[in-house]
Length: 391
Image (cartoon, rainbow, N blue to C red; front, top):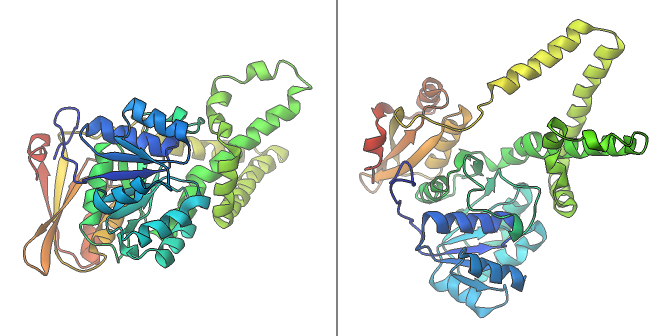
């Protein structure tokens, strides 16, 4: 396995990938896979013939199909062991039922920005719901469709995976390795926590950005020069407001409760600023601004983990359901980034879970949480050179 795919070509442990929905996210995923794994077999599935033609022209797919074409079913049944579902939420059920009817037993993941609805549907529709690992790449653009796709979209981006106790242990390492090979950083979240988390960091900010644009638009007629001032910080902070209104309306109602709660909390925070101004309370206003400034400055400008400060964590474990989900979620909860994850089987009932961590997060806290959860752990430094030979 390679630490940096730019210098050593990694292996792709999937025979064939079907990408359903070749919009910006689906097409970018396929493009990234084909850039890193030139020999990968990727089928693009979409309802739009022009999109499918573009997928072939760009080399982002090796074969194409509309949903009704028998070629799609044939690929799923005979060549495919990973399905990436990147369609609008309204189309999800038909594909889930089709995959179940066709006897698909590979790994199924998705790119939906909310998880409650699709997870519930998958549990009730799929013949093998244990093979579904909810996913959410935290990347995007104000552009939509294949025209907004690019192979480097996920470099440095967070990609959420939501494993659970029913997932076969080997599924998570396979999907994790594929996603990290595209340059993304995988975060494990319990699927029941996902929607509330992304409401705060993604959905509320979108509606705040839209509100800022509306505020400016309301005053544009009064001050004709206002629109010319919409550059620099204002333009950067409101870029996401240019996203598809139909898409974001769907996301909003799919995550209605968490988004509503987040927007109400946002109202309260803005109310604190208003209150400080009305009371002429400079101390309070300064404190509010200072709190935000401190948090913002603590965010890393970019993800640049040290390649010379890797750490291997080895965890003996029983082969029981949910152990991989438990460990990876604990690592994410303390900010530790897993560069690679492997399972070394010792006996039929026991194995060693091996994690390679970058120099992020609180390793001491991770150790304590693993021990508190009943695991025995060992840590050892690992150089980048050693890591390139881990199989």
